[in-house]
Image (cartoon, rainbow, N blue to C red):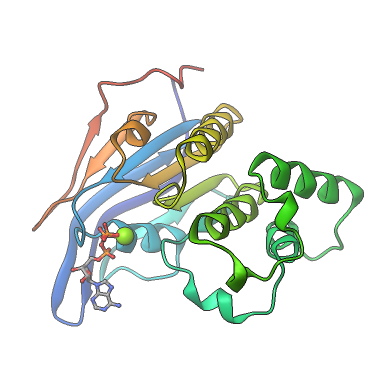
Length: 220
Ligand SMILES: Nc1ncnc2c1ncn2[C@@H]1O[C@H](COP(=O)(O)OP(=O)(O)OP(=O)(O)O)[C@@H](O)[C@H]1O
Ligand SMILES: [Mg+2]
């Protein structure tokens, strides 16, 4: 498969105060591949994803990106944004904001993604007026519109019904086919089975990167 690393994290350690959460974790996110990060509650999945996305800094080790690599993060907890008086459409459009104004192409992409994730009928609602799953769909739409090279997704389908979960899994597969890298934290075995590699974190982990027995979906 000869893939290039878009994001490399080497020998990462992280501690909250004195408490070690990650120790000596090494991962690579390669173009056209998906890495599943699994492990029980509290094992450090979200922490690792934050380090990869650069919103936290490791206590040891380092994270490097290939040139011009953009990273889109879908966080697990995003309660803070409910305080903003954003509508669903405004929140989704944020995925396309750069330094320029949105073009017709951007508006079309926003509309299609909102239809795909079935939030078009919620367009004018405020985020705080949504159900948990509707809110999650809105944030997923925003994330997948970012045209990033690396997508870091923290339990993207945890709040979703079965049909929507399937739609998101299709999006994951397409995104990888288009050549991006995905790192996804998940408790859903079906979801982690979509990945080409997996990393299981555990109590006192060093983390072990394994080739998943399941390699379907992503032979390019
Ligand atoms: N802000 C924080 N301050 C102190 N400790 C924290 C903080 N955030 C997380 N922790 C601790 O760090 C450890 C790892 O948390 P993390 O959120 O990375 O786990 P996780 O694997 O994502 O769990 P889950 O499956 O519940 O999402 C846990 O023991 C948690 O209690
Ligand atoms: Mg988590």
